[in-house]
Every structure is written in structure tokens, then in C-alpha cells.
Amino acid sequence: MNMELPKKEIKRVVLTYPNQKWKKHDINTTWFLPPYTLCTLATMIKKDYCIKIIDANFYDMTKQQFQNEIKEFSPQVVGISLL
Image (cartoon, rainbow, N blue to C red; front, side, top):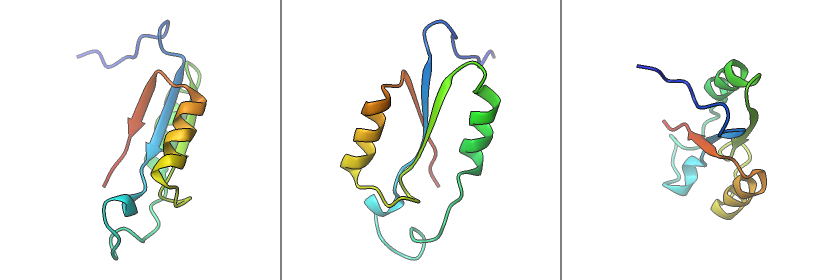
């Protein structure tokens, strides 16, 4: 199975961690979750794509702030990482 993204059509990629508190607020959603996997993936594809990492959990973004960050960057692809 070929997992390559078509390089000609996709130029901008956003990799994200949504804010876990949007769903619920308890001990499981308040601990720090470093974006290691997002950073690793970004490093692997950075030579072919313009990448932005949005860590809404770390910055405690609202849904509107999160949406605005994505819209402002205008990506063709959004990758979302969840617990």
C-alpha cells in the first residue's frame, strides 16, 4: 500500500492536537501531552510540505481559536492526533 501524499496538489499541512477539555474536564484531560508524534511526523515530511503544528491542548485554545488558526494557514490536509 502506497501512503505517499501527492506532492503536486498538497503544499500546506496542519498537524494538530485538539484541546481534550472540549470533550470533558477531568484528571485525564488536564495532564501535559507533549506533541512528540506530531513533531516526528513533521520532521519526516518537512522537505516536501509547508507544515504547521497546532497544539490546542497545550495552549488551552477555544474551539474558535483552533478553527481560526487552521483557516489562517489554509492547509490542504489536516492531521489530528487524539488519545
